[in-house]
Image 1: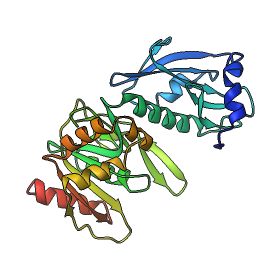
Image 2: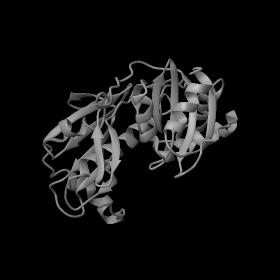
Image 3: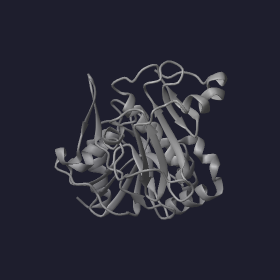
Image 4: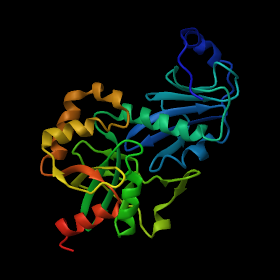
Length: 285
C-alpha cells in the first residue's frame, strides 16, 4: 500500500490541495500538544479516535499548529496522508486497514511535535501493587502478551504499545485497546474484557523490563546500568527520527527516569515467568 516519495508529486501538491473538498477540519490535542487534521473522508474523526485514546478533539483549526491532511478521493498519485504538505503515507485507494495505519502515522507526528516536553515510547505499561512497570519493546517482542498477563493478575492498564512520558519521566495513560495477535490477524480488546481497569493520572516508573519473547527461553534477569538503560530506551522511541530534534533534553529526561529505577533485561518464554518473578522479588508473594 505504501509508495516511495516522488519529487514531481511533492512540488505540485499545494496546487492539487486547492481543489480538494475538505469534509472535516478539526484539531487533535494530546497532553498539551496539538495538530490540525483536514480530510475529504467524512467519517475520519469518529474512526480515528478509536485508535487514539486520551486525545481531545475540537472543531476548527488552531492557527499555530501543524497540519495533517488525509486525502482519499482524488485518485492515484495524491491519495494519502501528508504532514505540512510532505507525504507520510501514500495509497491508491482507501483500504480496510488504512485508518489504522493513518492513526499510527498521526501518532508518530504527535510524538515529533511533542518534544521535548513529552516523549512517546514503544512500550507497554501497567501499575501493579503500586509499582509503575514499563515494558519497552519493538513490534512482535511480546509487549501485549506480557501486559495482558499483568492486568489479568490485577494490574491497572496504561498501554500495550505506546506510552507517553512527561518531562520528569513519569508515565501518562495511553490506554488503546489491546491488539491481540491471532492466527487470523489481530483483534482489539478493551482492558475491561480482561477484568482490568484503565489507570488514571501520571505514575512514577519503579520497574522497567526489557523482556523480549523468545520461544522456550527461561527468564534470567540481568540488572542494567543507567547508561545501558538510556541507550535501550532511545532504541524504542515511537518515532526514532525524533531523537535528533532535542537530544540534550531527551537524554536528561531519560537519565532522570533511569536514576533510581530498577531496570532488568533478558529473554523470556511464557509471560507467566515474569509475573512470578516480579511477585517473588518485589511483593514477597
